[in-house]
Amino acid sequence: MSIAPCRAPILASMDRAQPFATAEDAWFWTMAALTARRDGARLGAGRGLVVRPCEPDDVVKCLDRLYRQRRIDLAHARIMRIWGERHESPSPRIPQEAGDLRLWREAMDRLDFPLRAKGIVGGPPRGMQEAEVVPFPGRNGSRLS
Image 1 (cartoon, rainbow, N blue to C red):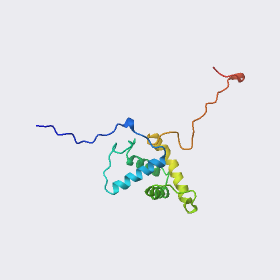
Image 2: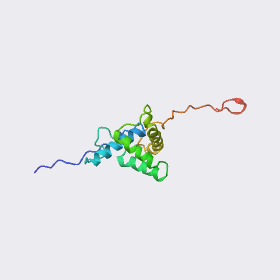
Image 3: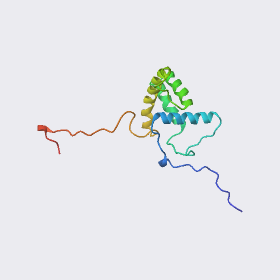
Image 4: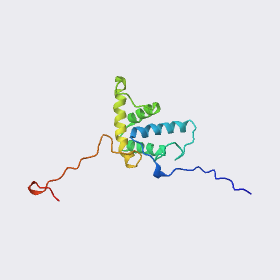
């Protein structure tokens, strides 16, 4: 009698998970996964080429929370869906896309913080760089030690 091999998927460890560089990258990944799911693909954690620290539904939940807090509205969500399905952002070089670009940037700026707080997006917050530490002078203009 032989023992049958285990057919359970081997999932990657979360300590190898690679966060996204930007909220925009996370959104494009989410839309690709949701489109694949809609088309019948079965998705699972840790099965892709790059291990991500979340599921597509986690990004959607952050978006839903922003909507319920009235930080984004249906116009933002519509633009995110349209451009997310195209897997590109509106171009600043095309005047007809100026309104879409404004809504896109607002939505990505507002989605950035909750995704960073959850570890889905890594690095410094969007548009910010590392701060310089400025010495604080003590009394009489001398430095404190």
